[in-house]
Length: 253
Length: 323
Image (tube, rainbow over all chains, first blue to last red; front, side, top):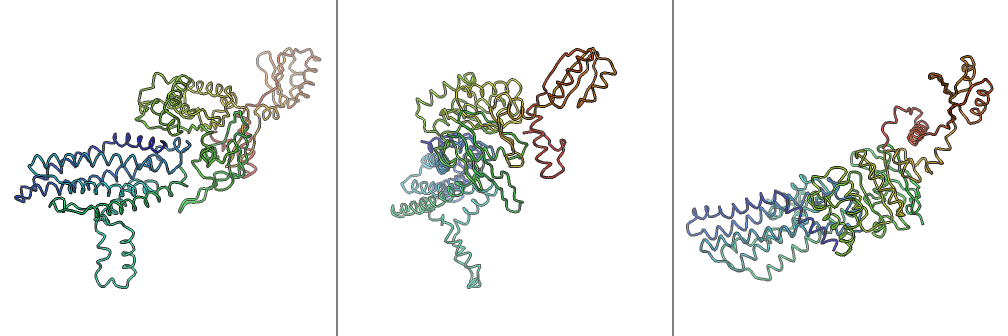
């Protein structure tokens, strides 16, 4: 009940955040505007609309997770609203989980809304929707859950600006983990290679959540793969949340 | 059982690349049940640090603190505490009614109990008219009332208040003072810091004075002040100038105002001797007043004494604002 109370309050707070609507507007504009690229590629318009819609969900979802997530705990400390909450008979982990669930609910609404807009648009353009499109949207949501956990961890450790930069780097590198292992030969035997390979194993491979091309081309993806990707994301998310809880547990506020 | 007990409580702040600051130095303090305890000290003396440790916002570096026998880090302890921070902040987009409901939920109260809490607190703190207005536009006094309501959710036996009268206008201060008197009558234990010493004097049973993180004095206000109360003011009339001059030699200070002569004597014994001589020389006694030191004067003197003993350079001008 206490987690739910914090979660509901976080949802209410985030839903009032103007940045949410600005980003949603741009996401919708990108989805609608994707038709323009379709005109360039004759006969490919539905594919491009699907592809860009899923890309917009990912990018704007990440921006929402970053802008709201990295300030979530920090703002409570900065504005001192945390004082009267932590002094209540509540476990600190309940506060972190409540904050996470609140933002998770926001992202669920955001991804659902963007999926709805994209679906309606594809149907209006005469295209067809199959389950792979929705599975792709689901995996985008799962990726956002992971990034939100990282954003909350940083929110209890550092300022929103620094946190946002780190999460964004995490997002970029997470989509390009191959660069850490596909190194030119002159890296062989150097400490840089060890370091970069170490980063490869620490940073989650966010490409695992990316089945955009399959969704655009209506290529089937096995349920087993989707479940594996979700399990992969859940494990990383749980680990990051655990770190966030540990960081916040002993924190002086 | 003691409402608050601290044993060698210390807090040291260590920042990366910053010097170490000892904010609290082996604080040993007890506050009895149903007691109203005023916690005094200048800015940076360690009052808020102590309060934050008691409310589990900060972790003590060494030592321990208990409320009603429960370690302050436990949830059981936090159930017993109602906390009002200095300049309380709440979610601006919530109304007072929603705020009380939210804190009731954090305490695990069911819906019916939360409703009863709201009705009770709205009546006590006169929140009815602002029940459904967003906190965003509230004045300091209104926020303070909401803050008190939050502290009272769940009817905790111990209230810890950090500068509850800070920044309020005289009417607001009076309302808070009356509320504190009411809570004392309700057998609540009150532990609060304040820089408004006249208010402390009116409300508290006991005070503690904190200087640079160390508790230098605790006691009942009347006992602390009466121990210092030695000077007596004697006002006389009908004395000749030469007699006045002769008698003035016994006084700490004296002055003449119209037909009255004012003598301040260093003890009741000296004053009694002076009164006998006033009658002997044909004068008339108008007033005999033992001079009572105010809490503020006592506080300033204690501060100065401690700082002088530490540095040998403390002066009253160095005392600065009391808070």
